[in-house]
Image 1: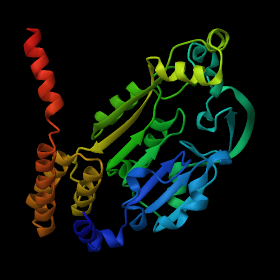
Image 2: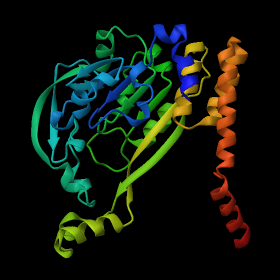
Image 3: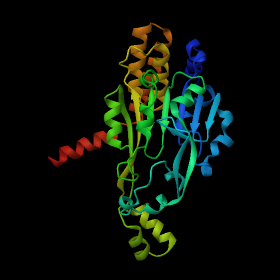
Image 4: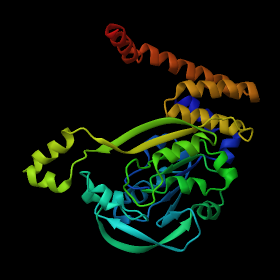
Length: 319
């Protein structure tokens, strides 16, 4: 992909407007999907719980430009906000954990509040404006309960031209007043996006007190936890712009192709390359289309169709 990659980032309009990536809840490390484009991209990273904010210190040079906001990203203008620091930093939120509802699940203790503090906060749109940016290409949010309202608080012209949006909303009642998975799907699919990926995550439905009482030994308890069927608790979701808007130009079609390819949606990348050529008559789109066609063939040659074939055989045998 390196040759195509270089051609994309040597395009005049992409040189002048590098990809802008938003990462809300930017703990651990650079988002694995961004590894190939980080060095050519601008990133705005937000995370107020600095107990686990490693990548800013260790990998900040991997981006073309990195804006770090060690404060809460909000959907409104407010200088301070209450923040619930939980036993696990990954569960901390401006929303209060719903411990009563969580009691039926094994990860209940991770949501126990150790301290409520007041932290600095910034409207996400103000942060974008302060960075002198007027567009976002890839929006990623793991805000523990307010992903949708953050996305919706973006300037409408910016929101309409987002190419990929990632969220991690809840299915169960983990926080009081949180944005739920079904709301995210409804809102995004009604406003110019299609659901490109959904990875449902979960936890066994088992009261923690009963679990601690009946199962002894740390190793065995861990084995029990990992062996039980998990109840759906939250989802890792990706949406891709459906490219039905006339606002999207050649730059967006090229980056849309690149992002779809990174997401391994080679069929949609193929569609964008074909549409991009017919709309803009740029030779690069011919190369992008050829690349996607070869990727589609590779999927066939690597026997990716076998699970579907086996399912079909099972259904026929069951009839």
